[in-house]
Length: 158
Image (cartoon, rainbow, N blue to C red):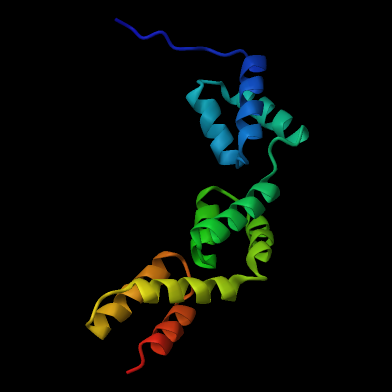
């Protein structure tokens, strides 16, 4: 027994993608992926993406800025992690640089606060294991290694 696959006209797909983009900022890669899942042909995909850009539903600069700001403020990600995630989403280097400007103002304050919070939560008695836990956590969050190791040395002096 074959499953019935839903097909969309270009106008139906356009309306669906307008809602998709209006709900949350999207990058071009996500929109194209969604259209492929809807089994749209390449010409229709191009037509819909151009329409979304022209109608300002899709804007990579706005996406990159909002993404960087959100991940920085909510998840406390550092520059390295944010840049890697934006690159994975196919964002241009120019837009990545613009996005990094969004987090510049409070970058070091957030790092200090995050490092201190994690330091306070580590219950490990062995200082070298505790140092490793703190360093691994901050590196995983995408903070620069020189910041991480300087902070670890400050909090766990030899």
